[in-house]
Amino acid sequence: MAAHLQEAKRVVLDYHEALGAACRARDATTGDIAEALGAGVSEDYLWRGMHPFYEQRGAHAVAEVFWQPLVRAMAPLQRRCDVFFAGDNDADDGATTWVCSMGHLMGLFDGPWLDIPPTRRVALLRYAEFSRVADGRIAETAMFCDLLSVMRQAGQFPLPPPTGQPGFYVGPRTGDGLLYDEQDPAEGKATLAVARRMAEDLSEANRIARESGDDRLPHEVLARCWHDDMLWVGPDGIGASYTIERYRQQHSLPFRCGLTDTEFHGHVARLAEGRYAAGFGWANVSHRPRGGFLGLPASGPAEMRVVDVYRREGDKLADNWVFIDLLHWLSQQGLEPLDRMRHLLGIKEF
Image (cartoon, rainbow, N blue to C red; front, side, top):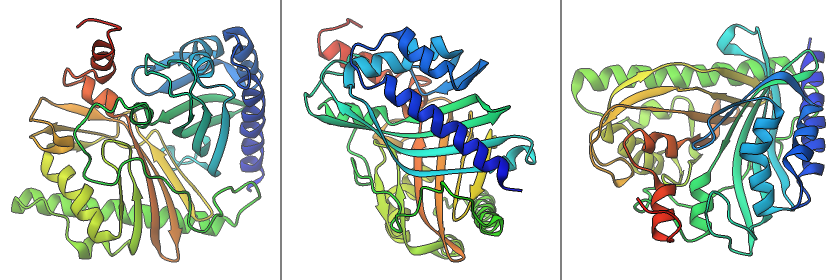
């Protein structure tokens, strides 16, 4: 039954190898990278990227908009993966098969990228990539990466200090996130079941909050599905938190109290294999900022595109890596941190 998952992994690993070879040279052209992409993706390939890249169609467009400018700035570019697994999509009753890859893209930041000034030092771009595999090719990709972390590395961080620890990342404590080999299907089902229970607990907590007017998420609710020494690794701008109690203080409370009128819109993909699970939405959630979240004032409604990657330990979740397209979220409120940076650097006037 798992043979098709192993085949999907092989397709994505071959794609990573071909793309990686093309991304080693700073003088790699759009055509060079598009050729490498084209060997592994479908003709009608759909690529979803974070602000300011958004949706692109076809290998050439993806190479031109995302990969070639990044390679020009940071070659030799190296993928350093911490989590890799495949699964049938729980969000469409298993109709599609996806592969999740998470880690960093690493390079020498010797040239500007999106006008972020180079540091001439090694740089890390944290990423989570979801690839839908069909007929032996990648038909669709969602590429989430932490642009705010690159701005921080370049001394151009545009937001108030985060409530969690900024610039913090570690991979799985168990060091077993690369699931290249076939896994016991029962383990994946158990992981998905815990993730579902956790989501149900949050839905219940949201209902109680609406009725009571108290947005605080009780420790005992989180403890149903999370280990007390959980690790939550959020995007730059929010930061990381360790233990349930610090997660409540440093992320859950600012998020829940700073955002209201929340509506959930589900996932494009949700998958699990072994003790790992992940999902992303486009968008997962919408809400209205009422002041305080990210240290910013109240604003109008906005949608949020979010990735969650989980590691299960026993019957509870232990690690959660989170990516949020915060630049897209801010742009809906009239805030463009990249443009503000360009203005401060004298590259562009408002």
